[in-house]
Image (tube, rainbow, N blue to C red; front, side, top):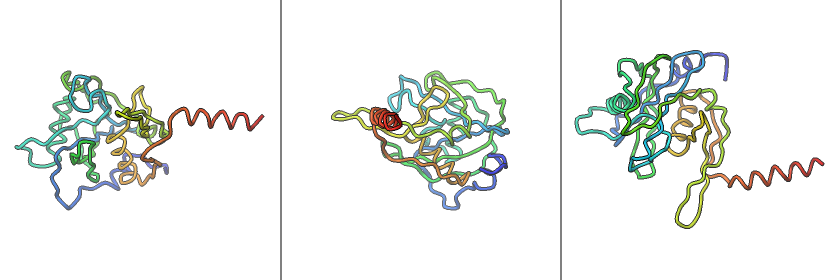
Length: 209
């Protein structure tokens, strides 16, 4: 990246789509407006029926009275983290993403004050935390195991603030880097197991002897 601030680049690149398509759910990608901007993330409660214990952006499903994707994202963020909608300076949106259950989710991006006070809604959120946008951009994709009935698959993930960011949330961050910062981060669909990388490292070490 050049020496301009990341938030300045985001403001230059992001806009709201002129094609209005109402999503089934929306999330808020809230970024602190400061020299080293941080991304607001949450860890979902382990007692939830969907995506329990996973890292996510504040957000959720559309209610019948919601009039836009922006309204959904801001309302859900306020319900989950007590973020005042008037503290959010909206920048734009990102392309629609499909969740594992097939639901279409719209990411809304905005800037928030660095010292904003937040409170986790205990029935939905176990933890609120902030991750450096720069660190997320630089974090190498590491294997995250997901177990299925017959086998384990390893999806790319970012390890930040003692948390694992993968799946839909990670894909939205990759989209933010691409469309908001003109930064192409390598993000394969699947990775090899950690054992594979350990074996490769061992072979390299033996080769140097």
